[in-house]
Length: 394
Image 1 (cartoon, rainbow, N blue to C red):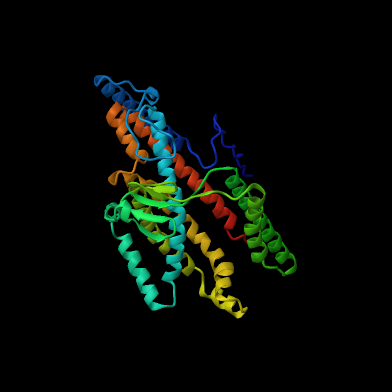
Image 2 (image 1 turned 45 degrees about the horizontal axis):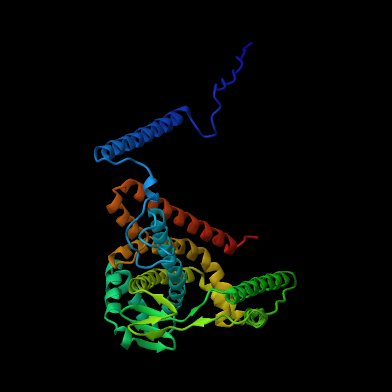
């Protein structure tokens, strides 16, 4: 009679490990973490030694000292007697100004170019393709220098070009009408935002009704009525916003909004360069939608415009949004090339601060942290939008 020995259960480890983790793996990770900490400590210690040898002390106390250098333009009231912290803030706001305006304009132009790239007209399609290839394969620095040179070749202020009423182009940049910051303007902006929110709510209600009943009313007429009617009502109640027109007085223009040659050249260069990449992203995203979607939509009798807006673009956005986010980040980071044409962005102001204080490590760490924060916030917003427009599987 045979006997079988009982199977002993495996001994439990003294320290419970996460699933899929071995002791050897933990040891390698601990060794890698220790190596990284040691290298970081060595670099930090070497930095402190080198700074002490040059009579420098690590710290950010220099931010409270007077900068002593002017900044040509900016959104803040800045004077050379202000601190380095305010100077860097001025540079940061200059960077954000060109980045935000550039992203909006580059997106609009890129979408239009991407649609033109798919046009049935062979001439339009060929011209757009040639434009995109030339722009994408030309260095951005060269384009910035080119546009800056073109602007500096414009006529003097007294012979400024006047293509539209109130718009003047000269060697000193661009002058255009501006709305004065006053309660009447704020009330109209609030009315405009309110109209947009109401239109969005109306569209969501009609979309829900379509899902339930299959019927949907157009929201274009009530939406545009809100966008036009509410600001007009606010203007009637609180007064119309005041428009300040530029006027030539002596050797320069007074009043209105001014765009310096450096800002204008940087904006044009970034918009044209980035729009070429966005156009290819839009083209590839639309072409990624199977042609059967077009055929099915045509079979239902939908016009081309509604096919693109209701059928093709919602499916193409899942391909378009991720690389579009990268282009927005690239535009923001490429704005650091403004130093080539003299626009006082964050990097330009930081370079001047480094030359005057010698605190290179501190200043570089500051604008690295700022660019990282900008990139993270942009990625967060675009990811939120991507999740909002993503196709929901049933």
